[in-house]
Image (cartoon, rainbow, N blue to C red; front, side, top):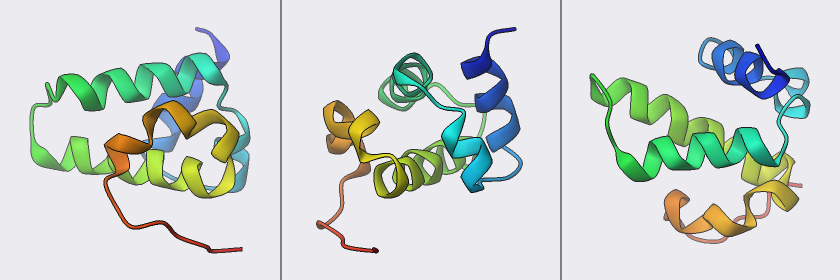
Length: 79
């Protein structure tokens, strides 16, 4: 299992700075694809992915620039 696959599985349970640092461009692309396809068994799964993408946008904005449309919120400044 590649690092980004492990990161995706672990963050479903807990979002923390370590799990966010494990993400790379490939992992964020996989996450964004899941959100764009919106093919979840229940709405809570999509909400978990949305929260994860939002956390990445705050803490690792360089990885999420192409996917900001999926967050669909006002600009934020949480520094």
